[in-house]
Length: 466
Ligand code: GLU
Image 1 (cartoon, rainbow, N blue to C red):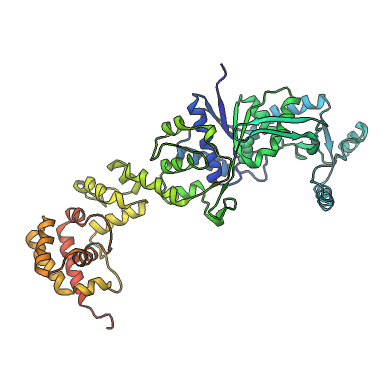
Image 2 (image 1 turned 30 degrees about the horizontal axis):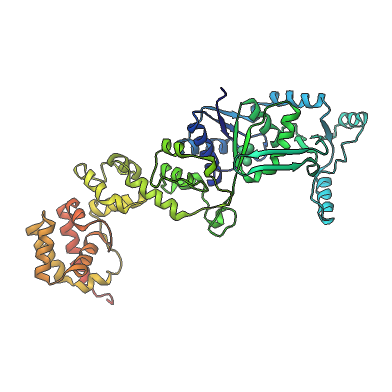
């Protein structure tokens, strides 16, 4: 029985973005679901556009996402001999010919075809060159690419895993370059022969590659190599419906990581981006794999929705254990007293989506630094200095019992509800909203509470005009 094999085959020309990450995820999930293999191949044959740094970035991003591969990473730049053998095989069947057209000549050809209202494609002008002429020009050092002779009058049909039956007329495909003038293999070629060599059975990739597929099928047929099944994923668009880009909200995986996103949140979001997943909530990777279904991938473009991503981020943060939450927030023992760790996490986690927010709460509760700077908020002035003095006195009496303290303050000040709690919250945390005040009070060291109430009474008494 052949094992199902998928692969992720990025060109390391930049940091991984959401589109790549989704392709990698879907490919990994399909392999996991079928007990298959997930292969990583770095398509770095284009030396001018690829970089080792970006290839390392891909590996780092995949590690962070927890998308581990079973085979690879294979680097195409190290497989030149393998490609050379396949070029030779095609040449021995006269399926390739050298093309001497310069980039300028090709651009001119394209312009003329477009001006005449014809689809641009290579017009085959080097195809009929006589062998002695090509030999002479090559010997004279003229640069030549190698083109594949596309057969005429052939229908190329395949069943796309996502888009269903596809048909292409070979007459619409110009002879295409398989080896560049610098001797490196072109994408169509190395991508297809590597899939065959690595035993890839299922290729999931972006819709932008759909028109490449008939070319690759022709190549594989000429080489008598097995073709994988191809599935082309619809584009991801921004909120404005335009392809996802920096301008409409796209961020790289590295940027999302730096912003404090959890990898599990991102996986959960991406697993639902253009793929219908019945089960709600945050699922572990194994459950995402079990629920993955090619038939549940839509054909319409998928719209990136940052609100949904944030939703999964909140679920992921809420699911963290005390230790994992503190590690996620980068909070060590110096910033959260040991005895308070569990209660701190339980109190603030529901109000936190990102590490910086958790650190901010730790500072507000434990650091003793002033929480109100600049002009005192209106609610503080309105409550007045006497209110905070009263609060401080009653705190000395009831300090450890927040319920008794606020009850006594309610009774003596005549304030209740928001009029009571907003000024208190402001005085103690500097914010009008947050976790239950009672939970926060239970965490805050008494000297910090007293100090904040004293500061609030001073601030409430200051004259803003002075
Ligand atoms: N290197 C290609 C890309 O990054 C791979 C396309 C494919 O998956 O076949 O677009």
